[in-house]
Amino acid sequence: MKSAAQNFRLSAALRFAAATALGAVALVSASAHAGTVSTEPEESTVNSIPAPKPSWFFVQRGFVLPGTAIYDSATGKYVAQIETATLGDLAIDPNGKYYYSAETHWTRRIHGTRQDYISVYDSTTLKFEGDIDIPGRILVGGREHNFIVSDDGKTGYIYNFSPVSSVNIVDFAKRKFVKSFELPGCADLILNPGVGLAALCSDGSLAAIDLTGGKVDITRTDPFFSATTDPIFDNVQYDKAKGQVVMMSYTGLVYTAKLGAKPTVGAPFSLQEAAGLRKAEAKPLDLNWYPGGGQPTALHRASGHLFVLMHAGEYWTHKDGASEIWDVDLAARKVVKRIAVEGHPTVLNVTQEASPKLIVVAEGEGQGAGSGFAGTAQVIDPATGEIKHSIKDAGSGLVQLAN
Image (cartoon, rainbow, N blue to C red; front, top):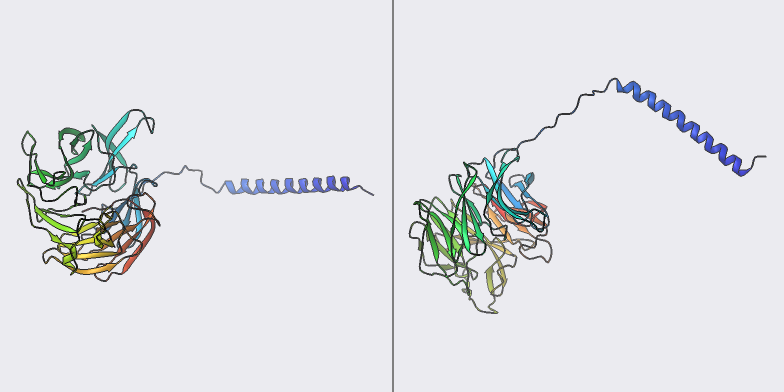
């Protein structure tokens, strides 16, 4: 009678023999099959996408996720991603050929030699085309008016703050830095057709920056707002066709300025009064409806309708997310619709199509504007308030459009 150890050794030997036989069969089968398989090397390919469409929107992924994601508001589908840097500022070529990203990098990641530059990407292949060195840039990324491109797409303007306010000018045709000029006490760059630029200033004025001659000439309007008690949100709305800019204060005062060599600012009106409510005041514990968020206004230029993220709260809650979007007819100075929204969005934009779509982004639960946590983007029909598409983990930063 065989011992248990002998039985175990015999069983192991049989298993080994069976495995060897199966391996041999597999090798024979593989050898026979190899003769029918192509051994030609694969060729790598690069997919392409169309030039940016009016229905597309671009979401900066925020502090946590890198890049800028592209979505189509018509379908709610992801299109592609531009490999922009964290804290970068994206600008889109008006001619639809390139994407530009103002970025900052240190040679040893978090220390070393600082490098500031504009990265250039082809809009159809998203291929990196090169970069343009600049003297510096403000590191508060994700703001609409830190980096803007001229209407003809030839020139870029990059706001800098190190330690004084200044502007870098870049020639995109030659792909090189041209010059820099100081802009004391002002920020928030705005295109000013036929003149150069405009900017908001800390003394409550609007500056006109004449770049048509060899010397930069800066003039200012009389102060029209208080930067300490009722500041203006930095996402002002530029309208090239009308030659004007629409601005809104923390309490909900709406200003319209005619651009030019000597800008003129019209008398403001109150959003709350335009909705039949009491005007909001710049004082503590004043309960009312207030605008708020990191990107609280969006202008549909053709119709002259301003859309605003609104919430019920106290004065100085300008970063709070919205419970409603107010649709404001600027010509009539009237709120014509109030649209309830979910998730307390802090970011808003509107497509410039004949039938526009609202884009909102709500961040993660308990997170404020600019927290960097990936949020949910929603596409809303402003005519009905219906949510057409909802995109989870879309990003949490600025939402931009191609036009």
